[in-house]
Image 1 (cartoon, one colour):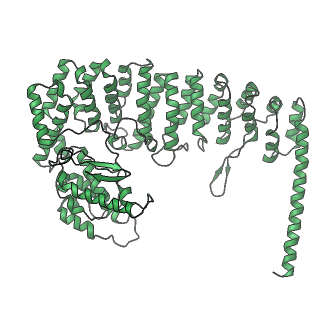
Image 2: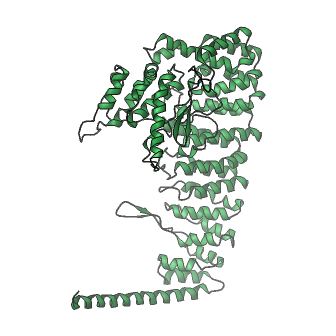
Image 3: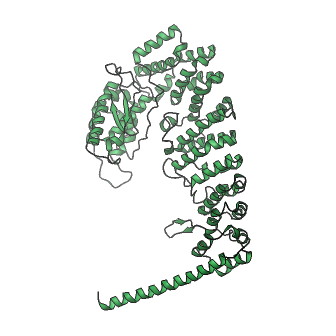
Length: 611
């Protein structure tokens, strides 16, 4: 570095020091003047006018003043309009949005306990703003005030939620809802809850009000009990409406159609409390509705009949499942309603509510009137709608139809075994001997994930025309073409067609599943998913044929763990089956030794075990 450049750097540093010293001296002088102003006792409107007219209205000056001002300043400051101009959001060149803090409302939060009435008057003078940070301050103020004062801020806050740029702290809104509800203001609490929860978040990411699924679930858990206790039926109706909205959002093609199935068996396999509900708002709302139904009955705010009627307004399967589950617990008090559902042929035959139906049948059969018991037995004797089953698979073998009908009858007869006649018990024993014991419905079924694909090289119809050996050879040897066009063909793009095809011919593919041993996980995952779907629908799978494939999957997962691969994103085999367990829907089908010859899949640390 030459001397001339060193001199240039030195001169620049000296100039910068001079500038900084002058800025410091200037602000020291400003702060001294502010201290003098803050010393006015008591402060009057004229002192507030001095602050307004003789000091620059920047963040540093205002923050210094408002972080030190006492509650005595509230009146003069409000009279001079200090709470009338909240800062607007600031937009950056990169399309970012900054929500600047406002020292004025920070001050009100700080001194809320010192002068609640004065703070309330000042807060009510704050105009509507898109700055969510200011709305958050208003919520903090409302939480610090007694409920009878806080309710006066509720309309102002409710109209600002969720706001153009989202809710800054959803949990604070939830706390305010509870504060209002428990403080004797259920209408205000309910209005705020509607504003906050109306925009149901997507399964991933955040909703329009910037709430994540986790935030949404937490707000529901913290507010629903207080809302139900304070508001009763209107709160329960709100939760049901929100669940309806979430289900419709998850079924975008459902508007205006008569279809009632919502595939809730996928996103809510068991109707009982879901510990992972925060991952899907439909499931967290199901938790909320389920708990609210029991609470509102326990509080004597609604009768069981009224709760069932409210749930029955909604057409989706999840509501029928909730009704059946509720009746299993409270049905002894309303045997006529239990009989109505258990003798409804459409409910009895609906595979999407089968678990809840069978559990209710087992619990509720002694509550039924004799005529309802006989009607139920007659419906079981008629068997399921085989035409529907054939329509679903036009080429299905007669033996598969017979097996489906017989396992359907077996499960329903077994659920009401105590009221069967000797002849009907003999029929049940034959069905058990032919098809094995009934699956344990008290155990929650496994979670299911969807499989996605891009531009598949083969359609499901083309795959179905291949023998299993031909299919396995194709999957083992096929390589995607080199192309830059989109959507590209790759190994993953076969998933949808492969799943659809294997599920359609599950009886044959399960018997020959050993041919799939050695395939990459991109293919094994859809194959196992397809077999799981078929098993869940009571298809007549060959479990001995499936066993070698699952045993090999075990080996791959075990080897992966043994090799020291610990990252979840790197554990291909363990990660692949984290949510895709093929569990014992074929329980009892395989004759042999050990556990009564039962093929069982267990999820342990994400590893599929076969025993």
